[in-house]
Image 1 (cartoon, rainbow, N blue to C red):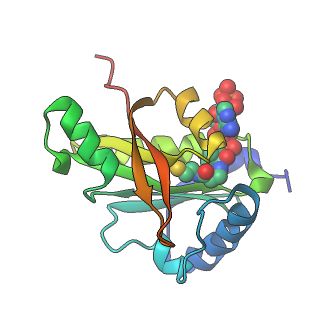
Image 2 (tube, helix red, strand yellow):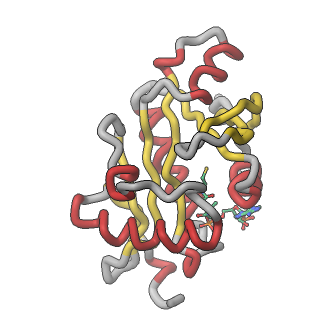
Length: 176
Ligand SMILES: CC(C)(COP(=O)(O)OP(=O)(O)OC[C@H]1O[C@@H](n2cnc3c(N)ncnc32)[C@H](O)[C@@H]1OP(=O)(O)O)[C@@H](O)C(=O)NCCC(=O)NCCS
């Protein structure tokens, strides 16, 4: 399935994209243990009611290949960023639910989805932050490659009650 992927687009997610997003998420869960605990309502997990926006990568036939969201929630990374900068946590926006189809990796779709969320945050005067679980080594490498900076590691409670380390990242300040 490598045809046409060079012309994949990043666009706002539509309600009818959700089943395809859930299908890819199930593959990502099996392969990468993301999310670690499979949600009872995966479509609801992706469709966060407070999200500022959600985007998909799609090939020219419309097939969905990846997903990302941006949320204004008072997450741990937002709180840690606020503590480090003296800014208010409400001025941070959290990148979340970012994944690409295992069959479309290494094609810069993850990078393009990340850029889309960062742009959406900056356009609203919000500072992008995110959290990555320690066990998601691939994602850690990906964000570090993109220049994100790790601020702190905190304990994160999964939905099954277990506690795991989560690294809190901040988007680097814009070069002026
Ligand atoms: C992390 C993820 C989104 C990356 O998606 P992708 O589409 O394969 O990444 P891209 O092709 O956009 O990669 C962009 C750059 O990051 C690099 N990169 C990608 N994965 C990497 C990794 N595991 N380690 C180091 N660098 C990596 C690429 O080599 C590329 O660099 P280059 O420009 O020098 O070639 C994907 O691996 C994924 O869905 N992982 C599982 C879900 C997950 O853990 N999500 C994060 C939750 S916080």
